[in-house]
Image 1: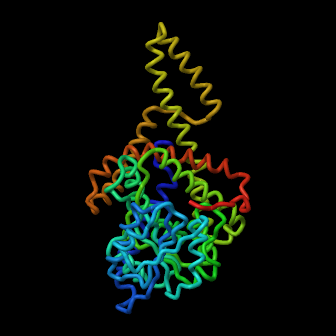
Image 2 (image 1 turned 60 degrees about the vertical axis):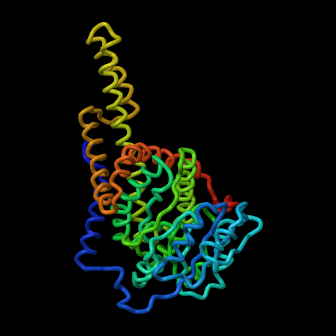
Image 3 (image 1 turned 90 degrees about the horizontal axis):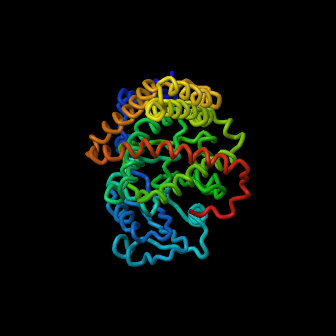
Length: 410
């Protein structure tokens, strides 16, 4: 079994394939979902904290939208930066609302929510910008409570971490987003999402009880039977971490927010079959298959090293075999999984080959094959580090209670 791909990965590949074929067979085209009717109006909100370097691109992308927002509000969360010059150049009509002291993204959005009169709200992070038809494609998606598109890294910035994140997005959007969309429990990318204004008001605005308010909000809407739509043809680009410290801080926040959201929702998660199925798969993959695979690979790697190093340092092959059996016996007592160098190598080839093939197919469509090839090895290594941070976040939040979040700012 260890030589086969992860069973949960196979399941998600099948679900993604079914979703893809469903879209092809039904001939669903997002751009014609409204049958030529006038597009609804929307207000764009940009939460910002010390992001004068990037907010100009975000504003310019709104200015260039084929369907422009009726209003743009910048929520300055007590930044050290002065946004006035950037705004005058990129989007003079935009309003700047400054909060003193800092309140955080969710709280700031909730302060302006009562005054919004448009049917929809676009929440756009200050380090993210959109393609020209992004809003048009999303608002053409028909009836929805939340709609979002495909996120890609801004390849003009960053190095190896940006390239690794490119692979993560190419693979994730192809497999994860398509599969969860078929299940009906999409995990929304909160940096460029359009929400139905009335839904946000019914829920009392953005929740302020975790460090990942977009995940919390998505689960709330899913539990209440809301409709979440993913539009792969609509694309946006975001700034990615430029070094390991920034990368670690970012994924720590994401995983911490996941466990906080799970504890906040508690038994209500079980009331939504869609969300329960998704979480069951995540838990099975993270706390069973990942551990089994890791133990198998480490054990096989240890056997490979011992097979060569012991032959060099010991006087005879018999002594080497005896030492190998003793060390292997200790490993098997702690981790009762079979070790096999050839099967471990085959497992890595299949796993890496599957990820590479899917990512490169998408990369060719977007013209980013070279950057994808650079990012593939880094992504594969960082994906295991990502798992370790996820496990650590689980242990760190065992005693978490919603009341412990006194400062949910990002």
